[in-house]
Image (cartoon, rainbow, N blue to C red; front, side, top):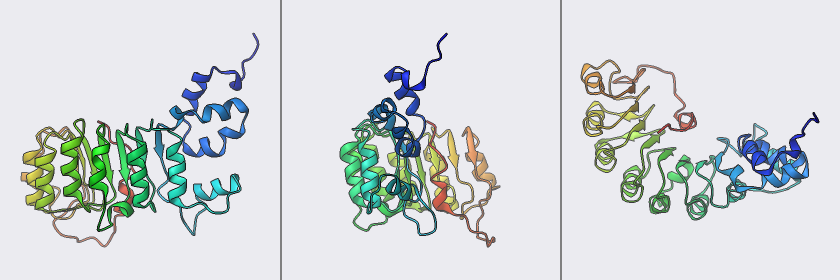
Length: 276
């Protein structure tokens, strides 16, 4: 039997395979193998799930953006321009998107207009920490959104409020570097009463505000409040209220910060996709 070559695969099969190799290979390797692979790499189906590296602009490391500029002999390319170029490859078919640090609100606007089918989205802290953040006004364009990862808790109440109005299938929220006071806890309960997955690892959340969430979100199946400050991980009341949650994680949480060790909460948001 004659041995088949990869380049002879039927187009839809090749697209299916290449859609699993990741952003870096799609940009820097696949297009240079042969014409059929190059053509397949342009299919929007290959760009449905886009997980950007955390950092694209670094003085210490040779980043994906640096390799991209070197490969294509591009002298100047900003983080915003590169991000929009990659997202544009999906032609509106992107359903999962993790944006990199260094993005501006211009990228958020672009994603809102170009990616209406998003189900999972990560917004880094750079976009959220702007005092006049437009993120809450963009939420309504992602009506299919199920999971949202936030790099900070800035504008959290406004964002959650908009989710409750626009995203009927929403089920998972992860917030990095969060400060959860009574206002935020009450907003989660009021606007997301049916939330299934909530990740607040490394947050500052007092006992009474955690209780608000535990008592109000009855459908939680996954709650991660590890390494938090504001309550003790072995508090009997907390453990009792969380006893009906299938996966409850609170290891390392303490009432006060007795440990000099510092958790890089900015990394927590990049641990992986929420499983709904």
